Amino acid sequence: MDTEAFWRVIDAARDSHQALDEAVVDHLSALRAQEILAFERRFACLRDAVHRWDVWAAAYLIGGGCSDDRFSDFTAGLVALGREWYERAVACPDALAEHPAVRRAAADGDESVVFDEDFHFVAPTAYERLTGDASAFWQDWAAFAGARAANEAEAGDGMGEPFDFADDEEMRRRLPRLAAHYLGAGPA
Image (cartoon, rainbow, N blue to C red; front, top):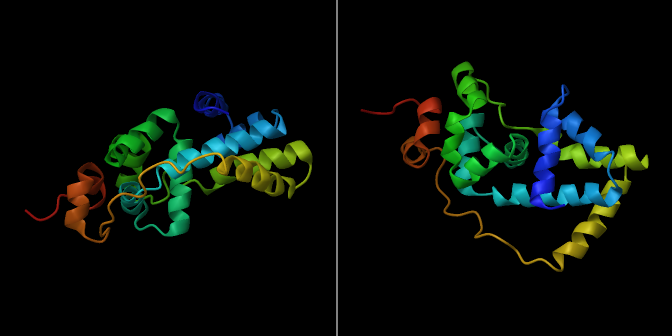
């Protein structure tokens, strides 16, 4: 599944009255098994592309801290935000300060916005619905992903430059708009 087809699935699900993860499962479960695996591959690639320190810093601010597991939920949530916001976050994680849900969450003290654990499981859930076998996805995914990994080079430049998320001044320097929401103006 190419990037365009992937985002069409997300857009179609977004037009549903259901929760996004449920709507994506419904859409995917109408596809062939190989297409569901291809969706998961594209999802993994998109998540991998935002596995960077600057994005993790944004998650740290938004989530009031961020463990490895929570960061994984954040990367899934970035994809679930849709193509426009995902691409904005890829280009500049500080742009998330402009997202209406992030702005509301910052004002309300909600530390769960963007973090979307359920979105991790849309492909496995759809696969189980299609096949009737709860373990089939993971077996088939291992073969599908393994076959492609041998033919694909690692992309990206790694995670970028690490820095101290607990250093408020560094966070203000690197993510000024998010820091303004979550850390305040800082020392005068």
